[in-house]
Image 1 (cartoon, one colour):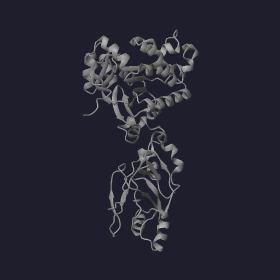
Image 2 (tube, one colour):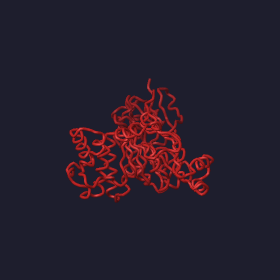
Image 3 (spheres, one colour):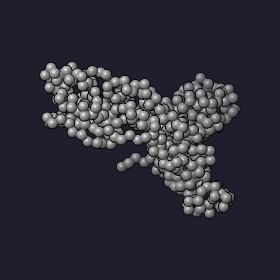
Image 4 (cartoon, helix red, strand yellow):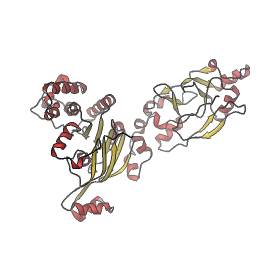
Length: 430
C-alpha cells in the first residue's frame, strides 16, 4: 500500500469577485483570465490546480507576479477559502474542518513562514520563535527547549534576547524560520521568504535551508518568483501562469523538456551548469570489462567502439581500474589471453550523481575513459561523456549510445541499444 502523501491538492480554484460562479464557468470553458475579468469583473486567481507533495519533499511553486502562487499557498491551509476543489493534509480533507480544527491544523500540522517576517516588535527573538508553541499551550520548559534548539539550528541562539529592531533582514528571516522549526509541523509553507533580502543574504539563506533540509527532511512547499532559486532548492517545481498550472516536474525535466513556448522562454536564461547534475546527463558506458575476459575480445570491442580504454568492474560493479588498448596489445603480444589486474591503470575520475555540471567541466576529456558516476558504495551508475554535457547545455537530447556486452564466446562482442540512464551494461561471465 502506497504511503499517504503529506499534502494533496485536487482541482483547487479561487475566484475573487461577486460573479464568481459565472467567472468559474467561463474559465472552465477555456476563456482567459483577462477576458473573464472584463466580462464579469471577477478575478480567477487560481484555476483547477492539482498536485501531491510527498513526505520529506521540497516542493516549489513558482511563477511571475500575478500568477496565483501566493493565493495557492493560502488555499493549502484555508487562510483563503477555495471556490472549488479540495486540499488534504495527511489524507484528511480540510473542506469539512471547523474553526477549532483549522486552528489545530495551523498550529500543529501546517506551519507558515511569511515573506515579511511577521515578527512581534515588542517580543524578543526567543519569544517570537516560541509563538506557535505558546499558542498551542506548550509548557514553558517545552517552549524553551524547542525554541532554543530551533534558534541554535538557524544560528541565532546568541541573539535570543534581542528585539527584532536589533536584527538585520537576514536575521529576522532566520527568526521566522526558527518559529516554523520550533512548532515542528508536518508541513511547512514558505511564501517567498527570501524575496525581501539582498542577493548575498538571500544566497546564505538558501544555503541554510538546503542544509536544514538535508538534515531534517521537512515537507516544504516553497513559493518563489525566482527561477534560479526554484531550480536550486526544489525537488519538484510547479510552474503557474495566470492561475493555471503549466508544468510540474524536476528542474532538469523542465529545462530539458519545457511543456510549451512560455515555459521554454521562461527557462531560457537559467544557468544549466548549476541546475543539471552528473546524474541528469549520465549515459551507459559503451563497453565495460571484467578481469578474466579474453584480451582479443576486449581489443575487438574497443576497436568497434572507437575507444582507447574501458572500465574494468568487479562483481559488485565497483571500478577495479581501466584497461587501455596499448596495455592489452602488449599483453596479447606476450601471449597472455585474459585481462589481469597487472594490465590495468587508474586513469579515471569518479563523481557522485548529485554533483552539478559546473563542477565537472574541468574534469571532462582528460582521461581515456569518460567521467564515471558512482553511488555511495562506489558502484558504477554510468558515465558522463563530453558530448552528453554539450548536448545537455545546448538543450539538444543526445541519442543513447550503443552498448557492447562481452561474452565468453570466441566470436567477440554483441551490440544492442538501451535507453540512456538505465543500469550500465557489463561484460557477462558464466
